[in-house]
Amino acid sequence: MTHLDPPPHVPPFRPGVPDQDVTGRYGFAWRGPGEFYARLIVDDLESLGAASGPTVLDIGCGGGLLGARIWQQAIAARAGCYIGVEPDTAAEPAPVFARVHPYTFEEAPIEAASVDLAYAAMVLEHVRQPADFFAKLADVVRPGGVFWAFTVDRRHYFSWCSELLGALRLKDRYLDRVRGRRGENLARYDNFPVYYRCNSPAALSRLAGNEFSLQTWSLHRLGQLDGYVPYRLRRLSRMADRIIIRARLPGSVLVARMVRR
Image (cartoon, rainbow, N blue to C red; front, side, top):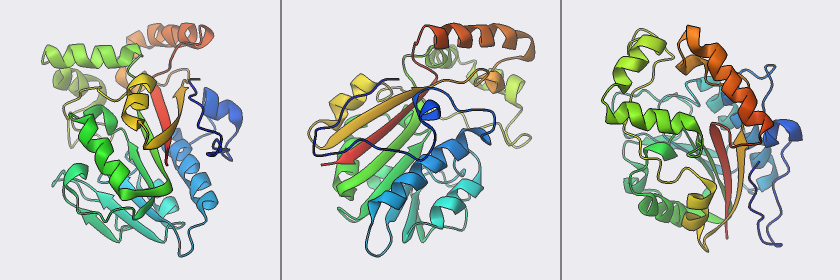
């Protein structure tokens, strides 16, 4: 786990999910990382105490929470106002949002200091101009409000492989082979450009500046990358997982919780 302590006046987050899950792994009893992420968000919503129900912002809402709408429904049940941002015009957001802004987050007309909790699942790796993204975040999240990020950890070899395939223009071909073609398999996601410019604790600490406190966790799970690895190579991938976990190296998923000062 990587942990950057918040200042004394901002207490660390105490989630209702087990500590051993937050600090390193989520077990097979979980219905995938979508549920894990949703529970972290819901735990925080229940502690915010907004008088009229918290305003929640889903940045990149179109595909559900990691492809599953059920977790957005769970969050909507605890939100006073649930809004989304989705620049992809081909996406069809779930009917749980009060409104969805069809813009990039930086362009979305969201009122200043109006958001109690914002989150972005597998979005930060696609942010080309991190300074603009986090300036917008500092503008729309109220003091004391929270931002959760779930993204690829820049320090893990998965991000290096992704960049290499992208540079060789082989990424789409590779994804077609291991996850199916677009439209034929729900597990096949759109191959949007990746930059990995705000995907490490060090980068996030710089971007948080004086506007946010920051806590980060790096998550592992044996076989977490199985969906991206050809079947015959999964034994090697899982061997790498075991080495990384035993050596306490960063996992493939970075989770960040930022609190607006």
